[in-house]
Length: 113
Image (cartoon, rainbow, N blue to C red; front, side, top):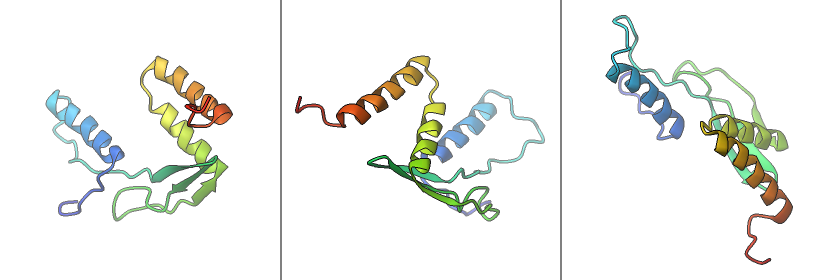
């Protein structure tokens, strides 16, 4: 909708980028609708094997679907799978779990060893 400010988040920038790529490459159809942001909710990793997911605002602004809030280990796993799934490089998809495992075993600060 016009006049509704969008949050300054990576998911907004990603969706706008995909939409603009279609426009600039001429792949946007004549009947295609203007850009509309679809919120996927908010996630955060809190450390110490905890996370939080707030799905109370999933959907288009003004038409949100109510999803539950998830906390703890389940939210951390959800955040990690979402983060890992957004990686485009095979190298990153291999290295990221290795870094997570290293951090789990040795902690984040290994300069003491």
